Image (cartoon, rainbow, N blue to C red; front, side, top):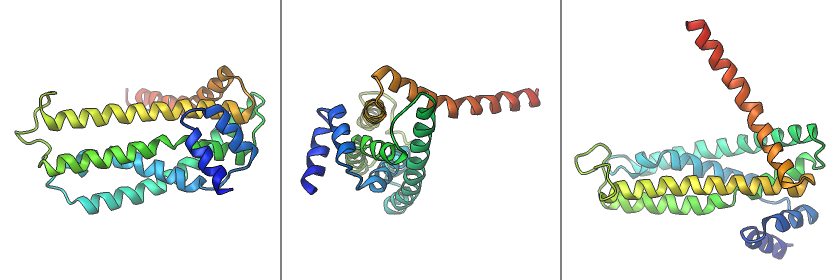
Length: 210
């Protein structure tokens, strides 16, 4: 069984749809919480990148608080994303159970492992170089080593996030029995369920203040 996990993890990068089907078929349900907690930690650390990289700030205290917040965020995120995909998927006749969706969502976050390694490496490099946010040495220009590293990290983080969404759509297709287009629809409905109420609340607040 351990070999099955290794095969699934190594092949997810190359043949995601086939791998998601294998994960689902063989019920490889281990590591769900751990993977999403890792993703949560990665996102929080990325958001705290400047604070972590600033040589004037305490590294370990900021890192520890980011890990704690990220672990909690990841756990809640797994439940929310799973619930949204499951409920909205049922509206368009999805076949997957909540357990199958939770498993798929968990494995889709694997690219964040690369993001975490890259983020920590960038933090280490510019801390060693003595980066201080807002200092005279930090010029917002690509010729500046600090700025270049920060921007490369920023774009890499967005690339990994986009890759996650691609894997999520492919995974939805595999477990729900959807075409890619219907899988995209399931994903967009999830976003709409969150976005529409938020937009309405913002509009309502704006009307009240006017």
